[in-house]
Length: 558
Image (cartoon, rainbow, N blue to C red):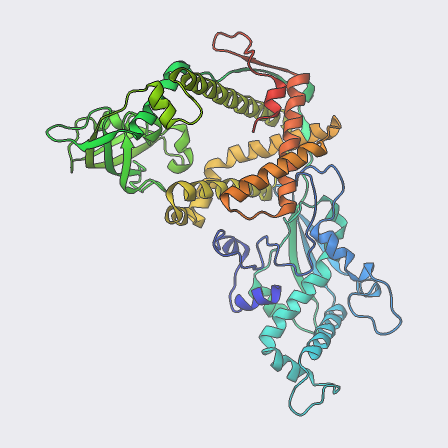
């Protein structure tokens, strides 16, 4: 409830900027001046199966829901009419001034006339009287004086917070109804500091507040999407057989024994335990999630080496030796490095091992250690197929990315900040979850800060805008081409997500799950349409058609 939130913030002068700096991932306490679902006690929970930017059917926003519950939407009664009756806004119309803000945001300055404030005041007291019936000296049916009801409620300060809640809830839907159809779901917020509202509220004066929301931006195609022309080089392993042998080597080492190295320094192929940290070389500030007291690295397995070139810089190191060097930041480290092109690496060799008794790969060893393979030949063949399937998936991801970039470049649209932050928060939460799974809750908590989140948003801003432009473009294609998502595909997608959630133990909201499933399948439909109806050519490294790729197989990958 808003009254609870306001009472928590009583005495503060919290403005919108300060409110937005409240921790986003630990506490979601509702306050005025930031987007929040719990701020609105009467808000509707939408059930929409479309992307929040581009609607395939009209939807009711939260402001529309409030407008539906406002005085203008209610049946009239003959006796004294409270604020939620149709004559209230007819008798005492709100004064609304509109202000267009950057990034498709619209702000309303709303003046609630004094008679309406007084009526809401009366209705709040009426409701409170039903809650406080056992006041000393008064019978339940007596008309208890206002000051006693206010005292029973906790004093005038708390009563004012309850009043502010009631005024906002009763009037904001009516105030914004002119633009409710164009507003993006959940983007509305109140823009005044809490203390300012608290200080200006009086029973015998008009009450003014500001509320804003993002509008659906208008999309314009710079050129027809039917004219898409792309050539994408497929992702292929330079040596698939080598990739197979690397995977087999990993399995051999997992079954081998190790012994402590004595009398020499580190060599390629050793197993090491190091203290590791990466810093920004310009500021010497540690990069998030890079400090480890004991990091184990098999120097013969690329997937265990955090930075390319690390092993080469460590060759010859002995136990307790420390080294300090700079390495270029790979693409996978873009978010971690927060824009820095290089990383200063501080490493200390803690322990040094070498492998002994590494088993030979024989039919007998395969039968004992790899279920269902039977022989070395079958094992290698199945690994080769897996490597090729991985290349197919990587190719599809690359094709999708190139199509997304092309769609983004083909449209002209101003992306509201709310939509950028929506994508950013979803991405950031997913990365936090991944960190938690790999490195534990402690590392995840270290990254769950407003500073890390803000740095992530700024480092990804261009890409986030690109994604939203492409999503809007794809949604427009979905509508213009009258594409559809099959019910059977929806069922399969939802069931697959439910199965994954059961395995991970995650709790899912069913409506949200269906929405996500719809978005995934809609993206597949648009992707397949583009491949079949435009000139998107996938080629191998020699520029010849990559025959392993097809629209049908692409539509089924994720």
